[in-house]
Image (tube, rainbow, N blue to C red; front, side, top):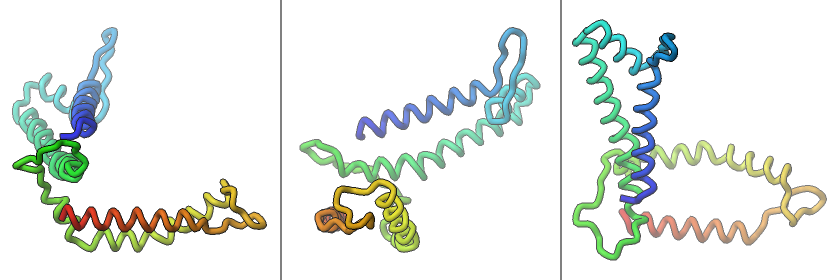
Length: 164
């Protein structure tokens, strides 16, 4: 696994633990509670309500599994192609969600839906922050950028077909 993703997973889990722990704290005999799973667990423990504590633990387990399946596992499977190891793993990471997204039309549909917004944003940014190749204050297309973008697009398409 790539170190950056591993560190992200550890930071996410550590941050979630800290947030849950800080939702119910006592400072100088003052008790502060914020809405969340941490204050729910603290209230269940102080009331000795095992049913509520069990439900809180079940909720945390469901959230952990959902975050793993819907965020971390697809990210790990996608990032596996960037490994710089000489030998390939006999069990490369897999993700049902990543496979579903790769085989669906949703990303292409969203891309075609958002493309006009991207073009408008590009025009606004070029107007506000003009490059050196301006003619009468109107942004002109930079041929090198178009060629470079096309080559990068072609390379990524070839790599996606190779990894599929």
